[in-house]
Image 1: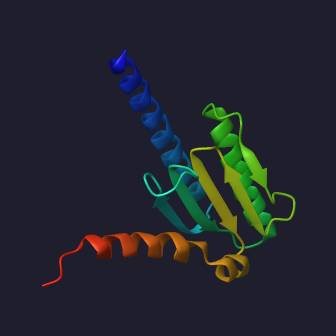
Image 2 (image 1 turned 135 degrees about the horizontal axis):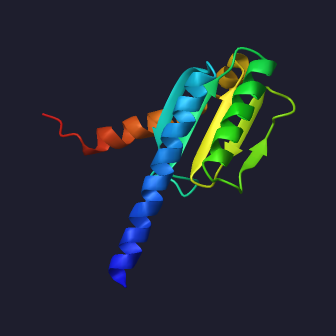
Length: 132
């Protein structure tokens, strides 16, 4: 039985990684800018991965989000939570495993989410480095 659980867990991890790579490729295809992938495994219960990206305008943010939603649904994700699609300033897409933030540049700069997550990674690395 334990082998079955391990196999199922491995299959789920593979499915999530494939969806993460699909999300990155879809955002790139949509010409999203400054795409930052963040591996959150073992750091947060929010999800396994986060992606932060920018669109040049309200329309670009909404179009990139819509393109990503279609790609994720085609890949089998059904229970996707979406916030902000109507406004186009900041769209949050949450599959449960992957969290995607697509911002207009001014909004992204104001909230500066990558500072929270990327700096946290750097802090973790500093704790494990040996100082000579």
